[in-house]
Length: 238
Image (cartoon, rainbow, N blue to C red):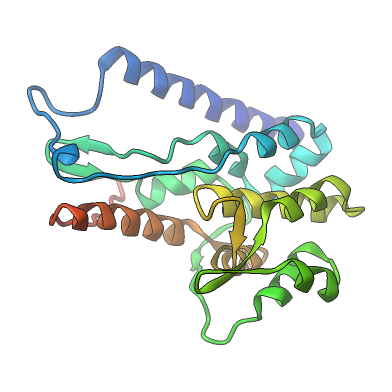
């Protein structure tokens, strides 16, 4: 089992290197003699989380910890190296990864493609969800939850402390995975309640892929609206 997962990880790394090399050799993905006009009418101010601390935590884990994360959450650590400030363009069409490509990227044996995540009307409070995920007391969690805009969140520093000191190895893995979902590319140095709601449901086998794709679509639509353009969504099953 260990070798099977490690082989898949190596395959992912190979595909990533091949993609980067192909891009460097062949240039961008625009059609010949076409110049993108996106920057002529859209300005995007993008600030990303500094993920160095998360990467360092991951780099110091032993095989047992890594294997536990891969078994439960798939290849989610690769999101730490994904560049989130661009999309591919072919002709005049901006493209984002399809459902199938996101599924292949995350690759988790526990995700069930027929169980799509959607937020229920009546859900647990943010504090209760964090208690479920971290296994920590309500008093500890409530003291660290903060109000940010119209929603609630928990600072990355508190999650980092749990990853370093939690006595339960499984919970350390859970909190690490929550941090990846929360920081790539969400609120700066915080995991918000929307991410916690999705993450709390992963244990039931739901797939987060449609939710991730919807977030990508929403973000690109915001960019297009800034330039009075329009983004069309296409599902590719090929």
